[in-house]
Length: 116
Image (cartoon, rainbow, N blue to C red):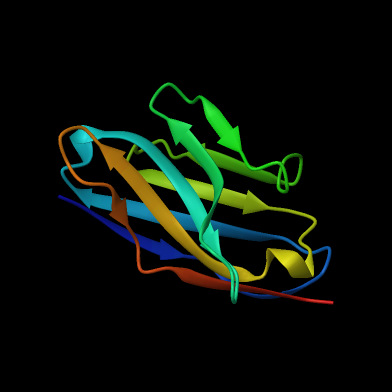
């Protein structure tokens, strides 16, 4: 299995920036895709961004040009740089990993609150 631990959430004013980090452990050699999802209060979980082992990225339209996903030099890490944050970005952010022959893995979540 793969275990994921997120960090970097917090409270920020609109227009500010935050950087989320996620470290994977366990069967990291099986990981093919890492990413971030979020769940806003009263809403369903939604994709924010994903990145493959070949560094192919995919973003939700709502965060394109504001958020950047990247993998660390150590391949079991993934970051989400969030700029120009808006109140509607307020949510719990979850790290995600897809791994070969394993169930998808999720972190515990980190809270991001953007004040207007």
